[in-house]
Amino acid sequence: MSTKTTGNRYRLARLLDGLRRGSLTAATQWMTNSLQAAAAELCPAIQRLGITFAALGCVAHQLTGSGSAYFGVMRTAAQARRAAAILAAANVGTVFTTATCR
Image (cartoon, rainbow, N blue to C red; front, top):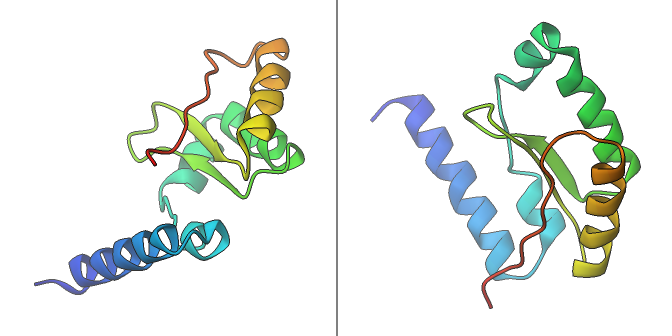
C-alpha cells in the first residue's frame, strides 16, 4: 500500500470519527482538496467563492474533488438556509441545502 493511500485512509478515518462524535470542527480539519489552489489559480471564480463562503461563517468549505461544485458545512440548518439564500441572491450558480442522515 502506498504512503499516499495510507495517508488518505487515515484522513478519512479521522473525518468519520469526528462526524461520529458529532464534532464538526474535528471532522472538517481532515477535509482536503490538494488541487483547489491550482484550480483557483486557473479560475478566479473559485477563489471568490472561497472568500464568500468564509464570510458566511462556514465551519469548512472547499471545492469538490472533481471540481464540479463548491460546498460549505454549516453548524445548523437555519445557518445553511440563510447562506443558501445569500448565495442564490448573488447569482453564483445553482444553490441548495442538504441535511445530515440521522
